[in-house]
Image (cartoon, rainbow over all chains, first blue to last red; front, side, top):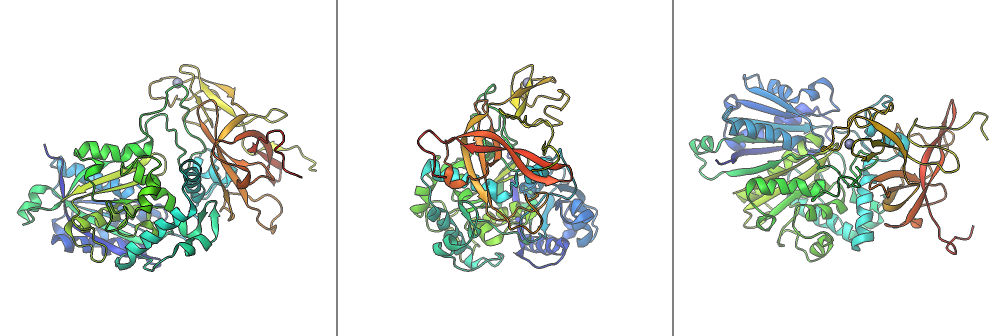
Length: 396
Length: 162
Ligand SMILES: [Zn+2]
């Protein structure tokens, strides 16, 4: 039995700091995706919203909020929350219902607004919440976690600040012509290296900003796509939403510690390695087949970790691959041809969907100004708080 | 000097005194050690659910973790973290950056902590040995509130000039 679903339409609202309600962004992206699919909203029989936690009641029930804004059409509804993996879990819900034959045309929407500065936990004294405790007891911000990973690469693999800067330079260049990117300007290595250090060894320009933004996809059964006149749609081949395997031995935000491996032993794969692995297994596709990857460059150095975790190279080899230009458009496996979070910034419930939009444009040959020539297979990867990770594999 | 005694910023996570140590919760069934204790993993009353998926244990005992470990990684906070972080000192004092370390203990787990006062990222590297100390984190109406910190172990002959 095929587990493919068709990506019939994709759309975004340009990312930035626009100061408008998240619903505005979401509906804009949804209408763009529906227009791209040439599907009427009234034909959609499932709507799935990516939940946003900073926008009160409407944000917590995002599926219905978008449905109401688009005009009630009686569709089935779901809302998903999984931190940075929210969008992929929303896609997974739609895919599962399509494969089960419970719906044919699903609209998946994620949108967010974000405050300025460090992301911080919710207010109030919450002594049993690790996300609150990491700030109170340690002053441990998100960049501090990214910096721990970066410093470890330096001490173990010989990565340099110049390598990290090179990731930013590459992604900034990739995003130059992307109409949905917030930042569209060249950045030099010197710009990165002379920006203020936030958390040693990471500079301000090594760390992604927060943004407003939205992304949407229209998923359908392959049969529906065919009846709709699309014989060879881009297909979702796998969606991985795995949790970690005990013991989780790599420090994860927002935890204060890892599990102990003393009794249970070290698992075969780290959590981040297991995320893409599950997608490859499900699709019967290997990393050697991948034409391009969209991964969460929350920090420049994290992109190097992801290259290894999704199997583009062996552990410790990402710097060499980067230096050889293999991950630049025109290279062997371009990474973040969209410009990545470096150019977009974080809009949490939207970004995993945005990755799928970019891969779809790439596989259709529509990524004007940033096209990976001959792209056949694309993979996305991300990790959210508390054991949420996801990876989506798409192919022509 | 404060008139009131210093108390831990969080109850039951570490001991104080000359040989201060983190207090882990050890599953009495599979012997896996957890830190910190949590409502779902190992409750403060010694009950909870073991997070080892192969174990159905629900009883835990306190165990002091090793006081020394090796640095898994490290960084610092060059900008003041947002609340609920409380800066030490008086309101209006200039922000003082501090370092953070993730430390691998012989019990097979990695534990985060701030780095002891007077030390920074320059004093650390992956694999370096550190030792647990207890220092003041901030002060509130009850007096000084303390926290565990990781202090680089300086081998004989390596001490920096003071
Ligand atoms: Zn147990």
